[in-house]
Amino acid sequence: MDTEEQLWRQIRVTDRMWEGAGQIAALEKVTRRVDALGLTAHRHEARVRLATAYLLGGEPAKVFEPLSRCLDSGDPELRPVFDYLAEAFTEDPRVPLADTLAALDEGERLFGPMPDNRLIVASHLGSDADVRYEAPPESSRCAQCDTGLRIDHLLRIGHLADAAELFSDEDYCSRQPHAMRAALMLPFVRLERLDDAVEAFRESYSAFWSDPSELGSLARHVEFCARTGNPSAARKLVDRHGGWRSTPLAEMDFHAAAALATGSVLDHATRALEIAARFDARNGNSAQSDRIRALLAAEPVRGSLDLGLSLLPRTRQIGSVILIYPTTVEELASRAERKADDPEFAAALWERFDDLLPNPEGVLLARRLAGSGDLVEAARDDPGTRAFRRAALTLGQDPPRALALAREAVGLFQSECDYVNAARARLMAVWILAFTGDLQAALDLSGECDAVGGNHEVQAEMLYTHGKLSQALGDLDEAAFRLLMAAESFGSAGNTAALGRVRADLAELFLTMERFEDAADAAEEAVALDPASPRARELLERAYRSRA
Image 1 (cartoon, rainbow, N blue to C red):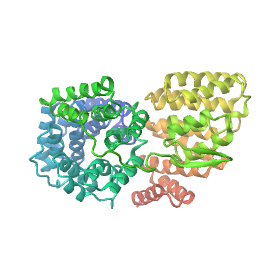
Image 2 (cartoon, one colour; image 1 turned 180 degrees about the vertical axis):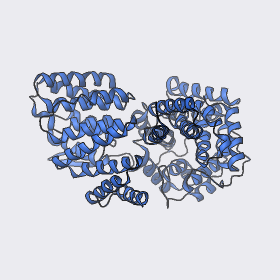
Image 3 (tube, rainbow, N blue to C red; image 1 turned 120 degrees about the vertical axis):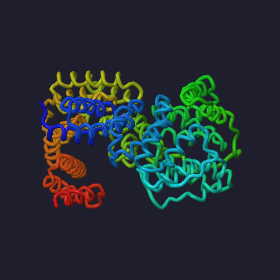
Image 4 (cartoon, rainbow, N blue to C red; image 1 turned 90 degrees about the vertical axis):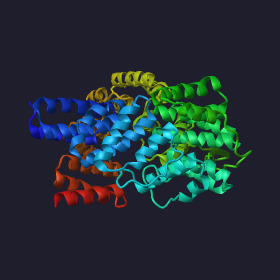
């Protein structure tokens, strides 16, 4: 049976897990264990984390049971939960209205007024016209996000000039000032601040174009193009991002903007109104359907606004041919794969890919490695090579098919005793499994590591992947072991950039494990390898503080 200290560690380990089903399952499991043992302090800590995991991991309607069991404590860690809850209420119609309002009442009893969360809920319900907003005395939101909330409110009630006046780009966080820029694009046009509108479009789109969680902001970019005389740009954005999945609110807004851009009433408009109806049924009014219908009927705000190079790629001359770069890494990868028979063109495309995304992950990393040129040691008609390339080309459209092809390539390469390429194909299969949500299957497959023909780089990638999957699933000792081995392999391969990244990952992992001396050593090495890395310096400072 687990000891109390082991249970504490299991609870803390979940802080380092990826948000989603794996983290939720781990917390539910440890919560059942501490309940069975009657450990009051453990029960509270587990449930605070479980409430947050439900809200951020795609199961927001489940938050109320763990939250209700924590309310009497007044634990400051609970304060951000109410901020997450208000946002989850607006994003997902499965979150009940009455329970949300009751929870906010309890939150205010514990922590004082929450005007930010009240405004978020009121705005969603269409009842914020008479709200006078003041910043809360306490919040998990930064000052810039609070300003963004105020700007959204002012825009909803028609105070465009006041909203524009609030905008500031002096401070940054993960979403700001880019979300404010996205909100202000069309208001800038109405205020005849056309240069500001184009700049807001360019800057905010550059920040969000590769992030599926920002589908709601990208809906604003589609609407902006559609209503400023840029229909081809609007359709291009719909094609580029239309397959993404996000919260119901974001998908509803994107479908509505896509209908405005394409006139596809039977598809996008119908889908947007179906989601709005779910919100209306939960809310008890028609506020969301009314908002979506108003967007579907929206008129242009300007006949033609020149977006300049906001959506246009850069160009490069190769010989007598002008290469026009696509604007997203997905398009770059696809075009480079199609140009595999022209190594100079493909190399130029991959170079641009590396400029935009120097540290790809998951499927994009698999595609980048597939296009690195190392694999083409095999004959062009080699079956393993063909299966591998077909897998790379299929990744973006059909992950299950790509997974089957990658597994096929593993077997074909192994039959030829080509263990380097067999390991690359296995890595591709592992990444596909991991980034489609099956972490345990990915870990199991990465553990089936065959010889890699003395190729330190491939060996290092395999070890690193196994370590990060172990960490995500909560096995920190195994994660540390694998990452240390990966660091050795990257060092042997002479890949100092990857070595610095792994040393920083180890420093962060050791801090979680409370191995502060090891964390300081790893962070010192990371800083030595990349003195300009803010992450490495921040980890070093944390390690020194923890060791003191």
